[in-house]
Image 1 (tube, rainbow, N blue to C red):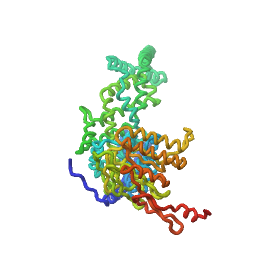
Image 2 (cartoon, one colour):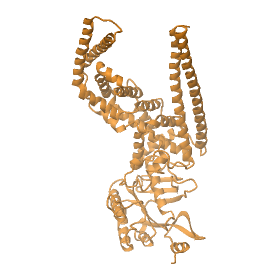
Image 3 (tube, helix red, strand yellow):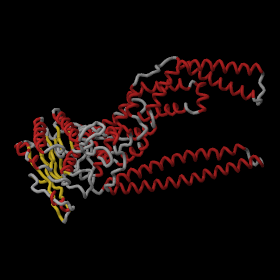
Image 4 (cartoon, rainbow, N blue to C red):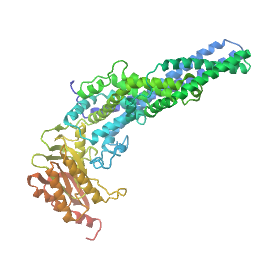
Length: 617
């Protein structure tokens, strides 16, 4: 593998700023060129009008001279389209680097895809750890511009990968991180694909059995189309003659009329015979394939790259096929899709039946599908995985001080140094060390509300999600074994499901307990354990649940401001320990340092705080 590019902490901002300035300048330049050529085109139109007037009134020159401005207008139209495409790419580049700088400045929340469509209320940690939604981990990470790319990234954030897969993703992210041109191009080319490509539908269509099989009738259909074309010409001649422009003999007119109707009957019979199959073939393609031209551009961009890391090399190899490359094959399918769309044009509605347009189109589609359709899944998966890896690479590039985690065979265990929450700003996050390994499997975290207990759970959980997705973590060091995460932090009641908060919490705890019976071991994160019941039942229930989890090989953290629960650790021997967060009252305001310390919290400021706001207690 090639030597990795080392990224300095200041490089991302400098590089992004320079590229943003260049893209803005390119956009302005292309806009000026577009405006200039637009004025020239208008001038040519006016000149052509003057030439036509002189040719008509004064016979100053031949009408053939009008071909000159006509050719110029057509050429300028093509140039204007090219300039507009370049301007759009520059604008998308501006948006790409503006979003990147916003992430560096901590202004990213609320911008970009939130991934809210992936939020499953019954997932064991997605809501609790802010994986999806506004201001979520997904919104911070995602640079994916296709729906299938977003789906892959969402899957990586909701299901831990094995250490071998994580290592491959880490290597890929390191190689992709400095390739800003590639990451920008993928985002720019895919900008308009967010709602266009229906990945699973398109892959299923490519793998489906063909409706029309190769048949000698296709040759007959070609001959009939020639006859249909001649019939159309016969109809035009008949109409022109009937209008008095030409004087054709009556027998000739009758022959033209008879030929047209006989051919129309034959073509109509063929269309009727094939109507259900052609409608199925063309309709399925129209439902499944959208914006394939843009997808072809994304694939073409990837075809131009060569990679060293195993995962990227594997994805690139998935695009290698005999004959035409995937980009050209997808472009061909896009042409067929455009031809299918043309059927809705009024002119094609008239001449299409004479050409047996639907029959030929259906045969062309079915010729494409068995040859290239089964490979669509491989190609689309490669694009989707590349987008997900590009998102992780961008995160690595923008945070060179974050580290890739190490995985250990000592299971279960997790050790973190200077762990910080990745969704908090640079000056907001307070880092803490944490160690759960060997005989120690449980930390009970005590402290008052707002002291940092819940944030500590989310910090550990979200960094574990990042680690097992293949991304760097916000820490000086993180070493862990493979872990499944189960969290009960934001458990709420549900009017729709008719459940109270307490019932929802114990249901979640039951799900975590069931998960702990499997593999890998569970990292459980439980906030304010059973606070919806009385203290007696809470202590008995909490200790029983904790013992059940530990007996199943799970490790984790439990927070509480009920000091009675803190004594559970004493009953667990070396398997449990207490840690706490402190606070103090200063000038009537609660102050926190958000630093985790060993032992049980020794003081409470609740009474003082109530008195500070005027309550008579």
